[in-house]
Amino acid sequence: MKGISVIICCYNSAERIGATLKHLKGQMWKEDACWEVILIDNNCTDNTVNAALTVWENHPVKLKLVKEQKAGLIHAREAGIRAAVYDYLVFCDDDNWLDEIYIQTVFTLFENNEQAGAIGGQSTIAVQNGEMIPTWFKAEENAYAVGKQAMQSGDVTERLYLWGAGLAVRKHIAEKCFDEDFPFLLTGRSGKAVTAGDDSEICNRIVLMGYRLLYDERLKYEHFIPSIRLTEDYLIQMKNGFERSYGVLTLYSECIRAIVLNKRSKAAVLRETINERPFNKGKLLRMVYWIYGLALYVNNDMRMIRAYYKKHLSY
Image (cartoon, rainbow, N blue to C red; front, top):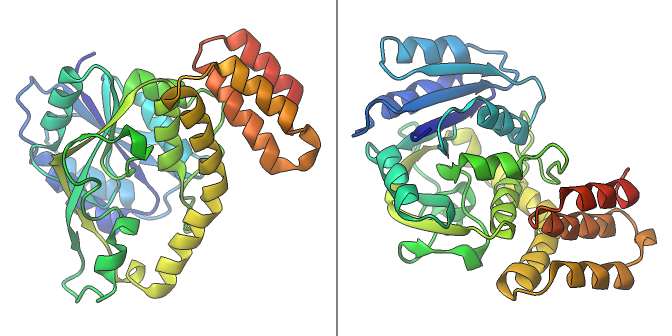
């Protein structure tokens, strides 16, 4: 169904969700209310749900509440995808204040770009509780999904990723990304754990399917960042999370560049990988087979790839 489903994943978001929803209420949407907001309660123990309902009260657009007990951002997003009724999705973090034309621009971009699988924008400002932003922040702002993702609007597929903040994805592509037979290797934020890489894994899978990644500077949002996250200690934790995801994302990159960008045969790459990298070298190499197997998956031979997984990749 043509429209936008905005998915907000929450873990103890009571202090943030009000401002996020107030910005969503101000959206300038030309269509006939063909959008919805889906709030995922990912084991919240605070007043997140009541705070959201209070802010959204009497708004004509539906606010749908979904409970997801499996901890982790990836699982919350999957729950949102399942609950969505519209063709296009926007993952709005609980601290993203979307510009008033955000969802209309996403809708128009998807309607006019058939090969676009995912679209990202820019954060124009880092908002804090009226306090001074650290002097080091400007040099590190991209780690916080703040700033521009590219020099200009256009195709950024070669970059292989977009920020998860404000990320827009076609629903049928997201459903394929989150196929239960192919669980994610990087599960994203879980509770207070500072992890990373799940946004990139989603984008990598989209590129493996043959779709493009677009950046459009008209998609703007403000990013609310509390003081507790603007410390050098928190920055180090984030960078450690990025580093831990590097190995997995490098394997995706190898697969994408060999098969998608260089258009080599999926079967040939798989055969070479099996011959060159025996199975007895540990978990990391098992991930190699996982990802090359995923390349076969995008070729839609589900019978073959499920048998491949069952034979080689059970833990």
